[in-house]
Length: 281
Ligand SMILES: C[S@@+](CC[C@H](N)C(=O)[O-])C[C@H]1O[C@@H](n2cnc3c(N)ncnc32)[C@H](O)[C@@H]1O
Image (cartoon, rainbow, N blue to C red):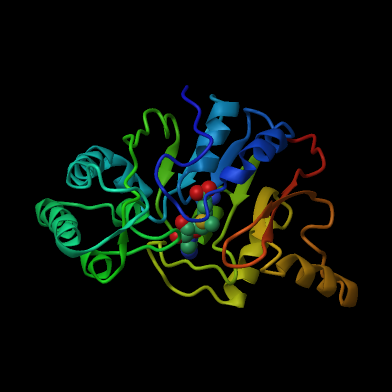
């Protein structure tokens, strides 16, 4: 099976920096477990489980319909081919203006009229880092840059053998919570993170983040957060002033420092927890 260490298409919040640590953490479990990726995003965690345990059942909750983007790779590549021709000889990373800008936009518009355009991928090829346009209208208002990738996108075998569902995470959790030998992969949108590229861009409030913690109680899990969210600190504090147990109390912690051009940096954190052995399992 082909191994991807990052999502085959641009995806904000993908866990590429944790692939190594996640693979390591998976060794605490085995192929008899069912792995349920509640906030599947780009599917990178589901894919990684399959590369470690090819025979394990892996359920990928594709809430954003990333599959549509994967299935459209051929047309995305064709569109990029046309953009490469239009931009041939034009310096890379340079702003595109005037007639060339009009030509680039008309190529995208034509593709849009003919069918589906993966605007997240097109954005990462034409916009400044971390800027995304959801549709043609938004794209046409942005400053464009020649960031068109020189090679085509490719996702062969990426989700091979993975079961795909598309539901609210609570519904998926309820379906699997009583299963013997289940591991939940819990990577919700981060508190105070831009979620504009996610399909249902409804604003996640503190209550929503706290609700997610309920899926960790008495379950095997991998949970991803960042020091920006302070959820872990909140849980620690609550457990010191009340009888409420801290869901991270006995979990293993793995951190990855990310630096951004916008601020000095933040720490992404992965916790994972394996329940004490139960003879019935
Ligand atoms: C941080 S991303 C997950 C990234 C993923 N682990 C990866 O490596 O690509 C969080 C995902 O949760 C999705 N999401 C938001 N609300 C959700 C909900 N109620 N149920 C399930 N998924 C949801 C977002 O659309 C986004 O795809």
